[in-house]
Every structure is written in structure tokens, then in C-alpha cells.
Image (tube, rainbow, N blue to C red; front, side, top):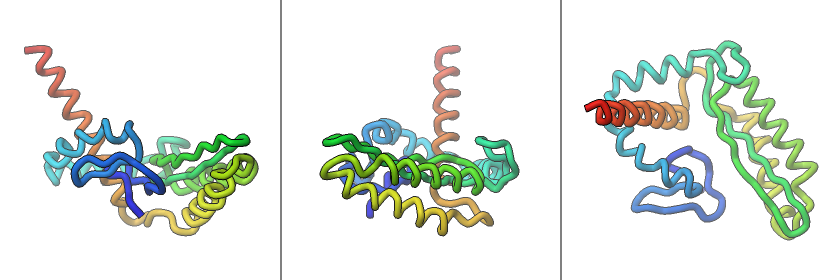
Length: 169
């Protein structure tokens, strides 16, 4: 299964391709330019910032870390319309479990009501949430997905600082 090169979520259907890169949607595709900038971040800066984020407090509940990327999956349907999404979020394991359980509950109640995609996608999203409950990221080390998000954040900060310096000059 393909993964988005920007946010790291699994791509079930479609996506946007550009060269060797694949993105889950147009928003991630637009942010793809940060990938090139992110590769220029020095390894020591990256490692330090990644460790700070991973061992820091949870941004959702302010509880103790470690934090990582936890993805919940959701689907809802109405007759011939079905909407599904994956929501990656940086949080502690406890908040990740709550989010996955909430996604499972909403999908279990509201996902089945669309034909044909509600009947197809609902079991997939529910299984992805259940699988994520049992196989969450290793708390001893940051996941590749967290590393990518931290790189993107550093690249975004670098780009913003560069733009501010250009406007000041």
C-alpha cells in the first residue's frame, strides 16, 4: 500500500503523483516543496529537535510523553454520499487511543449508510482503527512519520525565517 510522502498516511485510492513522490491529496501535494528544504536540515539539529518533540508533553492533553503520530480513521455516509478520512495527530498514546476509539464509534454508527462506498469503506476504516489500537508506535523511539513531520516543521520555520530576512533587506 502506498504512503503519502508528506504526511505518511496510507493511500487507499487515488492520490497525486509528481515524479517519484506520491501524495494523498492536493493539500499534501502543495506542501511537498518542503520535502526538498527538509533534506537540507542538518542531522544534529534534526536529532535534537526530534528528541525534544518525542519526549515532550502531549500537545492535546498536556500529559507526559512520549508523543508520536497516532492516526485515527473515520467514515460517514448518507445515501449515495460517503466521506472518509485519516487524521494523523501528534499526541500521547492515551490521546491516540481515545481518537481511534472515537473514529471507530462514529464509523460504526454513521459509516454504513451510503451505497456502495459506505458498505465497502466502513469495515476498512474500522479495521484500521482496531489495528492501530494494538500496533501503535514504539514509545522508546520516534516513528518515521514523526521524523517526517518534525522535518517538515523545521523546513517550514526555515522558509519563514528566510522570507522575513528577504523582506527586511
